[in-house]
Image (cartoon, rainbow, N blue to C red; front, side, top):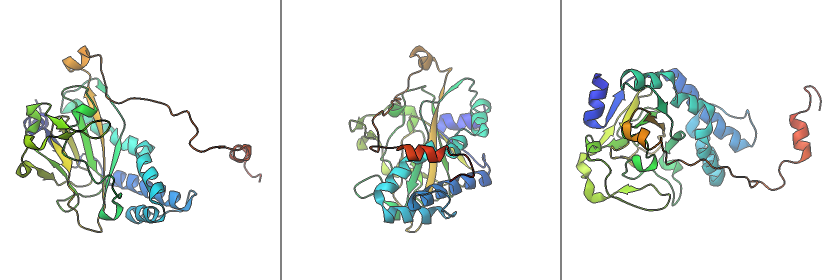
Length: 275
């Protein structure tokens, strides 16, 4: 058993320091900046590389549009490729001993900043475990990585080491909301902040109690991304025929009425050089 797997089994998480290169992650951050700049101006090619400025500009211009763009980030190819980087997969193969791997759902881009707080909306995740939202292999892994350096003053991920050994805990909440671990199941003093740098990757058990810290210095942006993996060799996962809590649906009603018009299609497929 590798030292990394031993620590994962003992603490419910392990940090792979410097697993990814910083330059590649910075390219993803710049890609996110361009997405917000382009949405702010309503056309491509209008942005710079200041991600926080781009996000604030769209937020202040139109909070509704900001929310739509933020919700779309998980579908960016750059984010997908980052979260499925061969070094992450190799870590699961080499350090955890996994062979065949399932991907239960998509990626998530996590945004935290006082200046980007949604009125009466999202501002970090409450105390929870991930298993209810995945329901895959019992040794399934949450992969969480920072897109900027994260310290105790920049909305860190907070975890309770060893909490995964208690299994699925009583929760409160219903519907599609995140199920919160009942407050009598943990002590505040047991949480520790995960202070990580760009390039570090956290591998965490689906049963580890964790949450988003709402403590952050004004003027700072915390960007992170996460995804999940299931181990196809875990016995109960095989017996349950590889389930996932994620559902795949198609929205067939038009989001925008009378779109597109023929002129827009003609413009897309017009030969180069013709107006």
